[in-house]
Length: 53
Image (cartoon, rainbow, N blue to C red):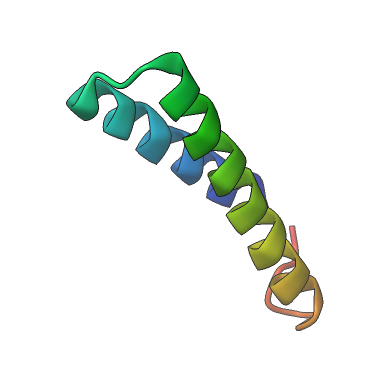
């Protein structure tokens, strides 16, 4: 879902601004968020009808 990804990216940028983190921390955060988004996507695909875009 594009909406979920947009929310994750917005959270990532807010977290980055608050913490003033290094690029390596940003990269690890993004990769963790990507894995979470993938897991959510798999869960949603397992329940058809909830996600109809």
